[in-house]
Length: 452
Image (cartoon, rainbow, N blue to C red; front, side, top):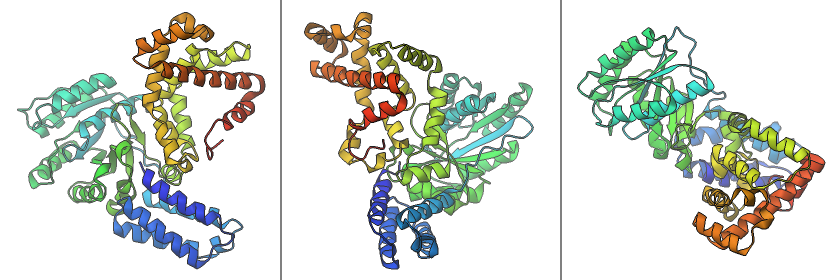
């Protein structure tokens, strides 16, 4: 998300940094570009006007004009105003109530409500250590109840059964009673969506809301609808006391207009981002971290948190001990590293969070894709245990066999072995002289502008 906006904003800021001092004229010119970048990102016009005016008022003041590094001062102002626009702090779910805490999911059909219900159940179980039950009140879409039951089993949440011939309000009330009797921490209620907002839909969800009195009412909306996402959220907020927004399909949205417009238009915070199809692809929304990503400064905190959760600490410690003893990094180790990177969302997700990656040329960014990682894993898995431990034995006939077994070409095997040898050299430097030597080794191999 935000790729186009990031490209435009970082380009503008880069030009400003090349100037010794900032004047009202070049600030005005830069803000014109910022305005165009926001409009191209499908940010609502009133939001764009207010944002650029706030930046202008601060930028033409003493804060920037008398700064020793005016370009950096302007970056800070834009960053601060982006954070302010999106909500300053991460708005967490209010779960400190007498259990069960009830979360009601609302939204239009196709926005990803049912999937988001399962993702949220998994997030609550894994991050907050809560016991969770999910229930479906969608009696209109034939597969909705079965879909939620399957997803609940996948994420290890309790599922409260319902049927399409039942009253949605009665289902919600019975699910709440079930959660109380089972002493469960959280009940998440999935509701029916429509292709558009109508009186019947609003009346039904209002009755459900009144019957179960949820502590959180989350509006699930597709980020790719841009400004319409914010307008739809506002219409729902007029009928329901929304407590927050879940913005879905953000991995397919290169603009990000919904994320920047929605709080200003509705007054409600974005609480979660859906960043992929898998049930673990849900992130808490941190305005400061998102602003940092937009300005091409990465999101190291999220990267560290993700590594803390997903990196296999036993394997990492084993590899560290192995290297410390002077043993060689082999293809088995390389395979483990690739698998762990895929577990953290793949190269695309990692690149998005690394500082400075937004400043790399587009052709370099385009070369980074998870398809190559899957190919590399397939090649290593086609090797024998001996070949993984002793890569030097992989000569012509073995390379042909490995290529055939992995459905790749011999040149793909050659390329992997070359990349592995480079990685092996870096690991050797790290074992001898620590991280500094490894980074020095990396620097010469990275494209110009890479953040090392």
